Amino acid sequence: MAVVLGVMTARLGMVFFGVAGMAVGAVGVMRGLLVIAGFVMLGGFAVMLGGVLVMFGGLVMMVDGVLAHVLSRGDG
Image 1 (cartoon, rainbow, N blue to C red):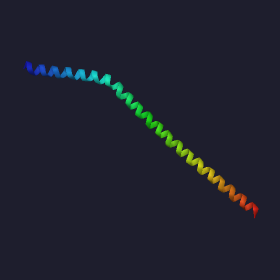
Image 2: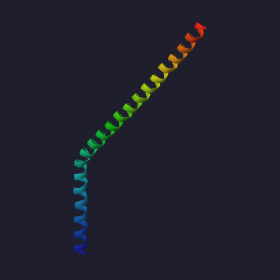
Image 3: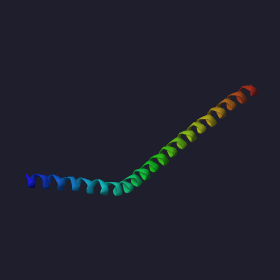
Image 4: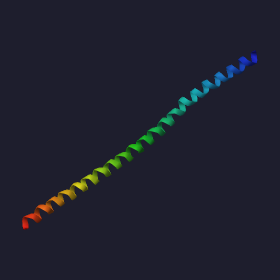
């Protein structure tokens, strides 16, 4: 019986040491997750900026087409 209790106590001690180690290691994990989240946000911003530029280019082409149409009708 003493052996069983000794093993259980040893396991409990290992669990406590593991939790304490995880608390210290969690800082590094959180830092890594924040860095990844930052890269994802920067990538999303780059994609959004590219979409805005594509839409602006389409607007410029549309205005150019409308102006070309209006100016060509005025000549005739």
